[in-house]
Length: 80
Image 1 (cartoon, rainbow, N blue to C red):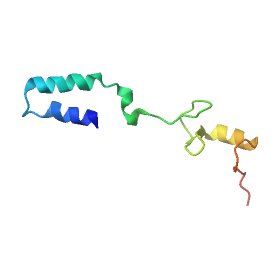
Image 2 (image 1 turned 180 degrees about the vertical axis):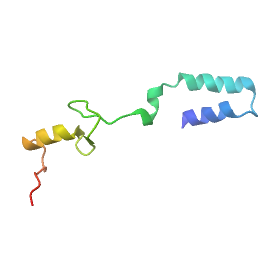
Image 3 (image 1 turned 180 degrees about the horizontal axis):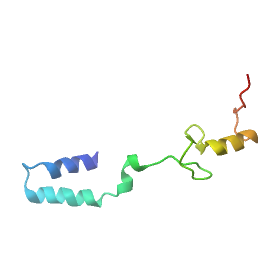
Image 4 (image 1 turned 90 degrees about the horizontal axis):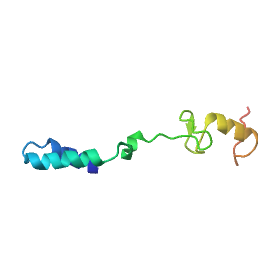
């Protein structure tokens, strides 16, 4: 939200050039990793970014390993 406000000020041609420059400098100070879009869910045990299950916080491989060992409460192997 803060970045968007600064961007609007920086692109507003009706404002004074010095105000727009200050807005651009403040935008440059904001770290890129502050953007929530750049955050990626990763497995808590291995750090693997793919096959991540939000409910458990781990990836599919670790889920299977821990599930087979009976370390995840309530997780049962499906059978029909």
